[in-house]
Image 1 (cartoon, rainbow over the protein chains, first blue to last red):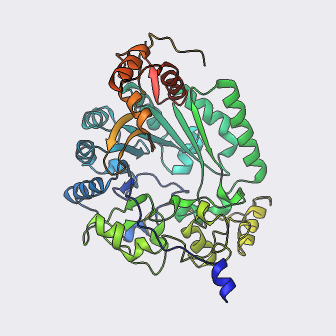
Image 2: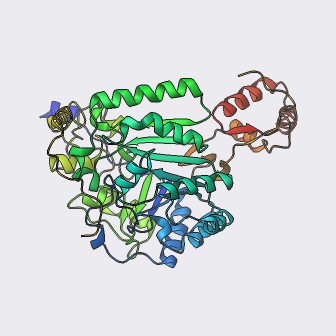
Length: 374
Length: 92
């Protein structure tokens, strides 16, 4: 109907700006086995990793388009021995370089070399404030090593950014985590609630905190801020399952973020590999410019023509872009549906059920699935 | 925050970087996992925050460069904001 057409008018995808944010997942290999990892659960079946020369080409092409923030992550990026060479090249090109690491593989020698190469920032992950829980959650003995690495980062005059992924098993330790961060001299602490993709989704039942746990953690964080001021900045990322509206995921797919997976697969988000029906191009076959501007996979979710109701006619569609495509697909089976986190989604009951489950006593739980090869 | 001493020497915050980005046609301030696109006047002030010039020298240089005067209050207001946001710091 004509009226309908007006109401549901969509806009053609505008020509996007440059991919300002480039995330290079250098490898899926990782010495840790974290239960909340968002890497694909079949990561061991992906193709051969890009060579050093291929990564350097990715950097040159992306930088020429205007990419300026560079994330080096994984897996554990330091598993690769060419990180120093990649950093040096990225620095020369003018990237601001963020290394996202578990700290495993970072010693004095490598840190000096990375500093010389022009690394700008290191984000170090911790699993918990206690050795026992850190080591359990990562299925490794890494707590003491991470503490040493934290001291090294400070010594080399880097701003220290600690990242702790929160979930049911550690969220009650937020106060201890913040005290630990302060003792280590952290400048920023990210208390990032688990996002349920990959391995984390497999373990959601055991990882999603209850509403009471979340409220307590937020209260503790607020009190800590009031007592200690802003010398250590704390970012508390609420789990989206407890929000009423979805997150503006990636600021809309294909608008700012470009991820290159270890095998060269170009993705509009690191979790997007799960989306069916889209052929994500490889940097081995195409230039970054043609991938970003011309490939069907990157254009598919630009604009809002792909949206279904209730997003299509929603006045907030320009604000949150319908939420996360991966979450919509993983939970509802259709990537074009509204992110079920949204209260307006007809699938919101899926989120409510998961949240309700957190209130039940957790007896006879399934065991946690640790990230591993299969 | 108190008023900034005219003799204070602001510098770009530790771990941050200011640079010109042709693709954005603007100066940007880069920090861990983020970026601020600066408008023209903010960029002109930030460019002069080298840890060696005092706030009054920065103001004088801006007034000279743009052939104007009376920029003191505006410059100080921006520097105060930038200090609060940790874009700038004063090293002693």
